[in-house]
Every structure is written in structure tokens, then in C-alpha cells.
Length: 142
Length: 69
Figure 1 (tube, rainbow over the protein chains, first blue to last red):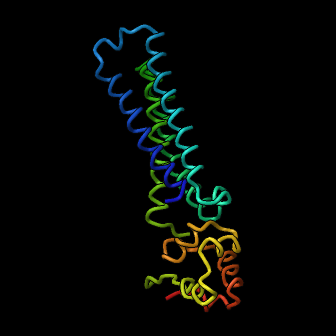
Figure 2 (cartoon, rainbow over the protein chains, first blue to last red; figure 1 turned 180 degrees about the horizontal axis):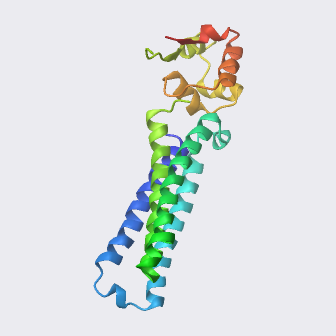
């Protein structure tokens, strides 16, 4: 398994676990709506902090396990896979941003919009890295 | 249109050139070992430029390395 494949897998798992936990907490925590702004910011900041640490740790582990330094450079297959995954993720992200930025402001506000935006970004990231992992696993045709 | 697939003799040609490793071939062609492994396994169709480079490494014409059946 190449380090890019490994990073994509670990990053998708980290996103699902960490942001999934945050979203479940937001949706199910009794009295979340009554929390103060600082509490909500702390909860969100903690979640993003854990994700940042997971990303850094995963990158370091993936790079140290790379079998040759030159394999860290992108070749034509890596660029093809990255380009296709980014194109698909773009559509997910743009759909999410239309909902968050154009539809939701008419009937929602504040933290609901923030959390929906976070969900849209997470969905795009999961699609992006999920497709990268799948392409390395199953192969890709030009 | 009937489905045709790109196949290759890279594994055989590596064997015939002193069991050249995938990493060695990759470094000569300018791609990673994983990409050579994916090409060999039929999981990735290389660009025309990469295909010509691979053929050049083995000193063979393109059609002796790759075939489309």
C-alpha cells in the first residue's frame, strides 16, 4: 500500500470518526442549543484540533513509511487519480455550499449554518479521499 | 464496439533483463514502483509517453511491450 493510499484511508476514517462524533453530539446532546458561544466554539475547536493532529500524525507516519524518497513525488498516475477525485469532490462541495450559503440563510441561522458548512466540507473531503483510496485499490483507466 | 483491453509483457521483459526490479524500471521511466506494479497488473493504462519510455528501457518496439486485444 502506497503512502498516498494509506493516508487517504486513515484520513477518511479520522473524518468519519471525529466529525461523526461531533455531529452526533451536536444533534443529540441535550441542551446544545442553550450552550454559550464559548462552549460551542470550544467543542468545534477541539474537534478541528483533533482532526489537525490526526492529519499531521498520518502524514508523518505515511512519509516515514514511504519505501523511497522519490516515491513521495507525484507521477502521472498519482496526478490522474488526484485530479479525478478533486473533480468529484468539487461537485459535492459546491452542492453543500449552495445549500449552506443560499438556501439555509432563509430559514436557519448561526450554528446550524456553521455545522452544516462543516458537514459539507467533511462530505467533500470524504468523497475526495475515498475516491483516491478506491482508485489506488481498484485501478484507474485513462 | 467490442471491449478490448490493454495488456503488456513487462513482467517477462523484466525477467529477461536480469530480473530488473519494478523500482529500477520505475526510476528509469520516471514513475513510482507502485505505478509500474499497477501497469503490470493491468490496473492502470500508462500515457503514450510513459509507454514509449518503458519500451525504450527494454530496447523493444512499443507493440512488443504492449498489446491491445
